[in-house]
Image 1: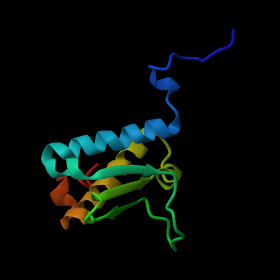
Image 2: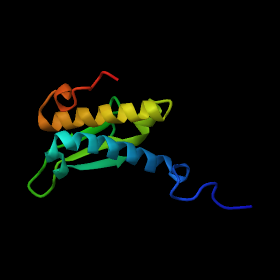
Image 3: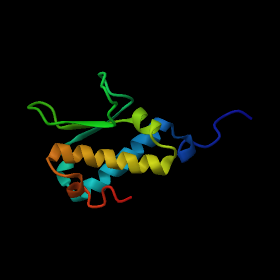
Length: 119
């Protein structure tokens, strides 16, 4: 019997990239309840940072420009390399999203999410 092991609507069929995007989306949705202005921010998942860095960042934030909304990028591969399982990955993704939102808003991460760093 050939074919997929699970139907497409079952999580088993989701790629690592899709699963990662879902983790980012879950984190963003949690923060949007407290910070509704985040609905105007574009959250992007990229494989790796575009330019060489001394240390590889896990995410970055770009403020809004006159013709572009603010953007927060989360880099999938560097996050995946630093985590062993889905739970660790979800925690690290949320921390990176919180840190980038804090940078964009000019706040401390603990102000963006009071549970930051406690998990």
